[in-house]
Length: 158
Image (cartoon, rainbow, N blue to C red; front, side):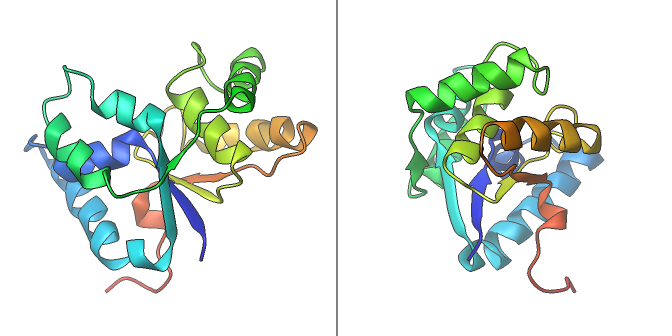
């Protein structure tokens, strides 16, 4: 079983109330993954995801937090925050060393193979793959594979 880190945008997509086509697509695909694929993986998240989803400005925070309540949380230990700082210093992730940088650092430090996200600007961005891999390798870590849910299926979709 692969370890999969559920990032904030994935959970938000599952519970969105927005009705435009883009959000509808992300919601449908995320819920399909949740229902069909989740049991095939060791799924984890972090306190950073809980913090982001619990923000009072997050309209569907109650549903989002309830959804991930049973999911194991990875610790945001000092080595995670140090690696997040390094990711920002090396310009792999934008500052500050919270949010995106913390998600990637947490997954790398805890040796999670995949980060599931809809954030294609800062996370699932093909232009960052090599840079992230180099920084992780220098730190003696494997680089997590960062993908949207439509790319992480064990069997062909029907």
